Amino acid sequence: MSGVLAKVSQTGRLSIPAKFRKAVGLERGGEVVVELDGRGIRIRTVDEVVGQAQALTRQLLGDKPDASVDAFLSERRRDAARE
Image: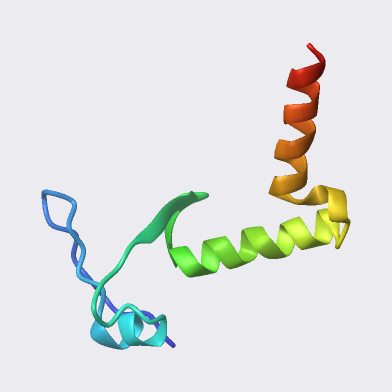
């Protein structure tokens, strides 16, 4: 999809064109993550950011059974009980 000219108001508001919102599942609004990307601004959906974090976690930890949040909390409870 090619870019379109948009205007940022003096209060910082930006209207995202309907075709862009529809393309990323934000037809009815929703939360986004706004990031600085060099000298540009990048807007991503929360689902995209979460999906990327989950993929990175799988890449780094794989399917190790001791790499879950539950396993981590259990280990911390055992450590606390030993103190």
